[in-house]
Amino acid sequence: MRIPDAAHAALEQAVARAEVPGGVAAIVAADGACDVEVAGLTRLGGDAVRITTRFDLASLTKVVATLPCVLRLASDGELSLDDRIGRFFVNAGWFQTPSLADVPLRALLTHTAGLRNWIPLFARVSERRTALAAVLQAPVADAGQVHYTDVGFMLLGAVVERVTGQRLDAAASALVFEPLGMRRTGFGPIGSDDVAATELCGWRGRLLVGEVHDENATVWDGVAGHAGLFGDAADLARYAAAWLRRDPILGAAETLAEATRPQAHGDDGSVRGLGWLLAHPGVFAGAAARGYGHTGFTGTSLWLDPDDGLASILLTNRVHPRRDHPSRIQDLRPAFHGAAHGRAVPVTPAADAATP
Image (cartoon, rainbow, N blue to C red; front, side, top):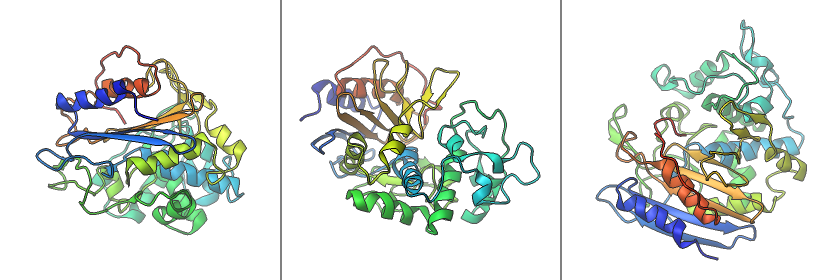
């Protein structure tokens, strides 16, 4: 097995045009057979990207750490996807109508809880317990409508911690990473050796290397349900292959199947499973895509296609040295993933300022 030339070329061309400093591309089958290619630098003027280079996975944390923990706990009967937040946090949404306490976990997984997509927690609080307290009082509006939200996965991470009695990093390691052999995946900080740099952060006053890019994740000590995870392509390939073969480590077969079935439809045409974004016209993996996947704001993405039995992984640090430089990640993603699955399609250029 090898990455199609057109897929690797999409990454190399993005590097050559200085749209991303560097990146890693991978393709993997259900049996774990994998090919990995690299291009560019870990930072401007820095070392070359290697196959082992770890990246800040950003919102891939949602589907690589938080989602499998929730599905594993549901499969084991430790919780139900229809449990409401009030079961775990009796003070959630206190004195509010509608109340967060009445929101089921399923709605958090499908982004239909009616929560805001983002709140500047980092500008209001500075430690983990207060961050959770603030999120537990988040207002709810337009429940049932799809609104992609970090806040919902912050809550899901907190639920995992409440059920397991462990912080999310320890719970994810025990339930997911260690059983799958993902030894280079974990929450930061992880040091700076063989790690792709992200942004020169104006708020923190330093270049972020091995330290979570997401500001809100910093007030969760870098361990949050929506962001904070670091990993390399080989580990993500192990994880993707487990989904392709529906590995019972991830959960019961019926639970995994439910996660990849349509659960909610957005006004923009998007289709949501449990955690996963499902194929639909205009999805980041290309208009002809089949299957499911997710993206991360730092320039990462993962797409799985059970029909062809392959998953494609793209890791870049497109926010380096600044998040507002013209990375054109919305062009690179469909070009790469489409070619990786043999379905390259025309790309419509689009601004990526709000790309997760």
